[in-house]
Length: 77
Image (cartoon, rainbow, N blue to C red):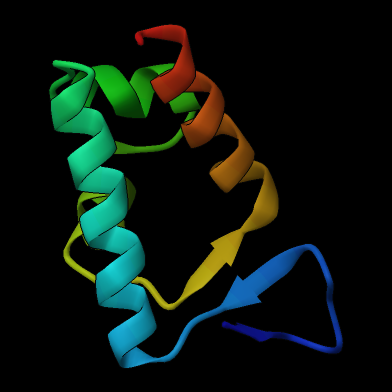
């Protein structure tokens, strides 16, 4: 994982890492039985942004978003 040295509030991923992170997010979402819309709402992000994350297309991730996704996923387990 490559951390942007200018702003520690963001994580910048490379291509393969973005896909792995996205797969992990999707796996957690499905294991919790949540739709994209449900997890997006619980994590306070847009459905489109979450979809880009899951597809490995979003390379810059706000740490707060990751925390929100973790909390939303954990609240359903």
